[in-house]
Length: 270
Ligand SMILES: NC(=O)c1ccc[n+]([C@@H]2O[C@H](COP(=O)([O-])OP(=O)(O)OC[C@H]3O[C@@H](n4cnc5c(N)ncnc54)[C@H](OP(=O)(O)O)[C@@H]3O)[C@@H](O)[C@H]2O)c1
Image (cartoon, rainbow, N blue to C red; front, top):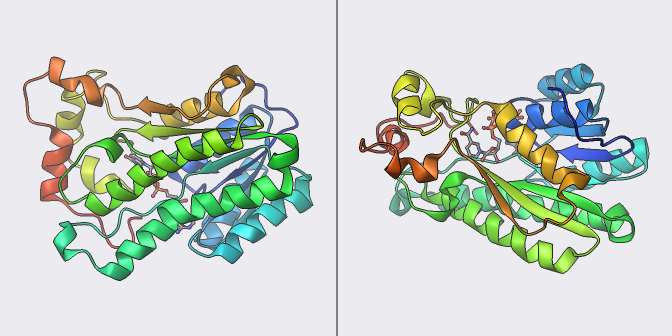
């Protein structure tokens, strides 16, 4: 991805960057001149992503506070600064009606999707950002502000992340800007159960005529991370191909919700 946003000299940490949106974000940051530190649970995937990017990487789950501390330490040891944090790793489990939600999985969802982003920002703040400034981007979802079938746990965690984004934006200003990007349906592994074998229907229901690609989200993240967005904090940038305005475009039922009703992710899709 070519980039017009100069991030030379900046250092970025991206969670869940071994594939999908996180990898596209990391690629965009590198193309803009940043040095990048990536994570993911799969050690081989992280190694491959880091090697391809010319980045550094460390494998682990964001659910583990020690992993997040090591991640911040790695960035500081290797590069001596942390200017950009992209909280991207997430889980879409437990999937299904809330009355069936396993409390263990519910807690884990909040640990991965809400607590981990806070912890990583705390580590980056203490290590660098409090004194030198920076930019945080949390990846939320278009579905965070309304209800949908079977995604109650996921959406609830993302709604919490959305609120935490604004709270942190107020608390960390003026040094650190904190924003979120909310994707609509994007062609990644996490959402494969939604788009696979239904792409034409899904695209037809979207005002912009196609589902999202990871690069669509990466460009928005890059812009928010850059000085081009220097007067923007506490905002949520919706990147959804017109999902929210589809009612004026088509009278057909919302195809994403139809898929969420009829399909389910594998346990490890997250
Ligand atoms: N795709 C969509 O339609 C869509 C829509 C709205 C929002 N989003 C959001 O976009 C973000 C990225 O999702 P994606 O669609 O790009 O998913 P993806 O293709 O499945 O990639 C997820 C990435 O996160 C890593 N990961 C997952 N759980 C982790 C954990 N506990 N600790 C560390 N790394 C972890 C994965 O590697 P390992 O599995 O090896 O750990 C992988 O690198 C998420 O926050 C998601 O909620 C996606």
